[in-house]
Image (cartoon, rainbow, N blue to C red; front, side):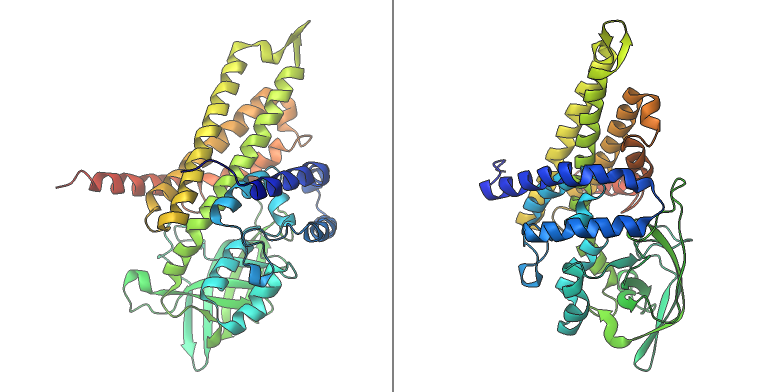
Length: 397
C-alpha cells in the first residue's frame, strides 16, 4: 500500500482545508440557532463559491457534474471536510444524498437519473433514505415491517420509518420496503423512489436528538407511509434487490463516515492541545504541564493515527479487491473509529472543563450529534460479532 498522496489530491485537500477554516468555522455558531432556513441560505452562498473553485461533489460521477475522485482520494477529502459539521454539505457530498447518488448511479434507469440523480448531484434538490423503522432493529436491514404491495401499475406503500435524515425539505425519499415476502430472506425487500409531495407521505416530526430538534438538512425525520401510491417504474434495480443495493451503499458509505469522524477527531484534538497550553491552573502553570493531560494527548494522537490507517487500508481494499472481499475490514473500522471519536471528544471536553460543556465551542455540538456513530450504520456490537465470526471461520476444520 503506497502512502504517497498524489500532488493533485494534495492540492485539492489543501484548498478545501483553507476554505473550511476561513469560510465555515465562523458559521458554526449558527448551528445552535433555530433559524435553519437562514443558515441554509448562507451555506448556499458558500456552495456557489465551491462550484466556482471546481471543488464541487468530489466523489460523484464526472458525467453528472462531480469530480469523480476514487474512494481513496475521497477518503482524504472526507477527512478534511469532517473538521466542520458544515463541510460535506457545502462541498456537495453530504449524507444521505451521497449514498442515494451512488444507488441511483449504479441502479437507476436513464429516466430516473435525469429526474433525480442529475439535480441531486448539482445540489438543486435534497433527498432522504428511509430504511430504519421504529420497532425493528436498525442493524438488521432484512427485518422490515414496511410493505409495498403492487396494485396494477402502482406500489401501495404502508409503514412507519424514523431517522430518515434530512427528510425535512427533501424532494424525494428512497424507501426500503418488503415487496416479495414469499422470497428468501435477502430477496424480499426493494428500494422505491417516493417524491415527498406524494399523497400518503407524512413527515410526522423532526426527532429531537439530545435536545436538538434541528431543521431542514440538519434534521432526522419520522415518517408514516399511509397508502402512499407511486408508479411501479419508481422501483430501483428490481424487485427483491433492496438488500443487495443497501450493501452497495453501506460499504463506501462507511469509509465516508469514518474519515469524516477522523476529521472531527483532528479538530477536537487541535482544540484540546490549544486549550491545554493556554488554560492557567496555578500561577505560572498551564494545564499542559500536568502529566495526566500529556498522557491523554499522547494516547489520543496514537488512537487517531491508528484509526486513520485502518480506514485508509479498508478504502484501499475496496478499490483493489472490492467491498465484498473487504467486509471484515469495513466492519472493523466502523466500531474502532466510532469509539476513537467518542474517546477523543470526551477527552477534549474534559480538558476544556466547563467551556467544553457550553456551546461556546463546537465540541458540545459534535458530542450531541456524533454519539450516534456507535449506533447507526449497524451498532458496534453487531459489527464485532460479524468480525469475530469471520475470524473464527479460519480456525474451523
